[in-house]
Length: 335
Image (cartoon, rainbow, N blue to C red):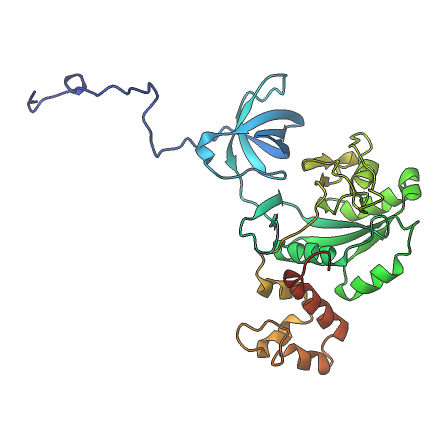
């Protein structure tokens, strides 16, 4: 065994070779202070399309990010080849803090959250008035998810040439949700698209709806230079065929905001939502909860909201709407 004296230097120390030939692990991570800022447009099998200084590049997630997911709408820091040339690949080394996160689960019993999109300002809930028939329970669930994520909801009713919009609007009037009514003819001549575009100005809006409601048709009308495939509704099942397979962020003309088209959903689980947060979307009712018993579900005999409404502080229809939304976790979307 070799013994070292008092005056050893690095050349005197024997270092065991690294058999794997790679660098030793370290807890120190590079800061990448010179990384460029990017905006994630779409994600496809581990490859991400990112907008960097008006160029679209292809990037992959750096190993140092570990299991941290990167989704459409994320603001990221990118290094490597940022030219956007064919067969080049950059690295995403940092995901900036998110201002909002829209999540869903497969169903109400599924504990695994799926992030739909990050940093959105508004959730456009697209539903057809006919062909396929509207599903109010799914709309309610999307509203709960929007309120939970801090997004402003927008109700977009399509195919008004097949059925009147009044019954649906009457149902959601107490919630005060803004809405736009469209039909295919108006989308073709541009009138309906202009009305929807006014609601999207200067915002990042994510479009959600089940298959066949005309969501992608609407997005194509809003961003005509980026046509996405559309499908038909099955005459037997009444369901649409999935034509959008991945979320995609598209800029509105003249840089007046962003729309994010998402694949059609058949369920919108709310396992991740704390029902206590839903009341924040009802500022006229929230003060009335001060007299509620602890852990009140707001739908029980001792709930103080009944007296709050009886005293004239809020419209009874608003309390009914709140309780309907809170009950969505206990129901199936098709109920």
